[in-house]
Image (cartoon, rainbow, N blue to C red):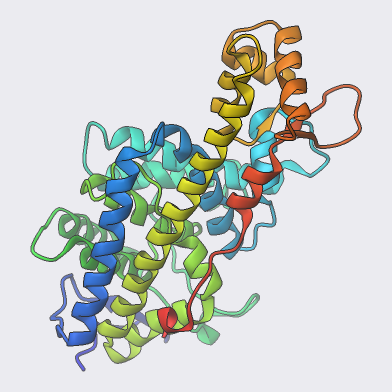
Length: 382
């Protein structure tokens, strides 16, 4: 197999890896064609059914939050989805805000990227802006948010030196050219888009253009690429759950490209993740819609439409507070309180703690759907 790049010896004596421009020469084996077909079929079904879902843009919010938590967890952040959603709803939390801020930055970056894609395509400027959103005010704040690195970085065990690294990305003076080539490839349409984004993800991680946040940004770009290419009408598909659940195989497949030129192993793994996560996202979205429909039938017996409006809010976040409901629905706090109490009576909501002030409530059935682990078959990661 042809290696996808070459090693460069630095004046300090260590070797960096310089990846070749995309695309590589691919071998379209029956297994790769089958993996692509399965992924295309699954994501096509998600896109088709997603367009028919009521309020898909509302449903997008908890899926973005879920992706933010799982992507950040790969980097060691400990915030949970429940904590992020509760904080977003205005609930009072005892947890230190540091991890929540990092996860919240991911949400802000993704939402900013989606808004910008309404008027422009993926670009180097957009990527730099995403990194700025991701890293400002968190542990990477000293790592030049929104600015391509000007020093060497490396991947290795905590405390290891560059000479002990398992991987050393390209030197700083090569980064602008490499990133420009990568962005140019993103605009090409010579390959199936799912294959293109698999190649882009490998290349971005191989370049490692920032001092921190490369993993999170690389995962974020997958979703934005699919939206930019109009593969999905709304960003319901994310791969962090798949990468987290099969983390060892994820890194092995990336290394197989760098060390052996084995693109097919990486592509089949990535496309398997697309297929699995498309099915998973559609299943979760449909279950949420069905549950809300059942509750709307029950809530219809209440005089007035406030409980129905409150159920619509739960589609975007299963946590609520009285001030939050009052503000979002434009109603008095007493009216919001009565609607919440009614949904408690229907066993839709339950109070999160025993506070008498600053109370918050959650729809546990919705939260369980969002929090349950992704289900992977063994064949999907082999």
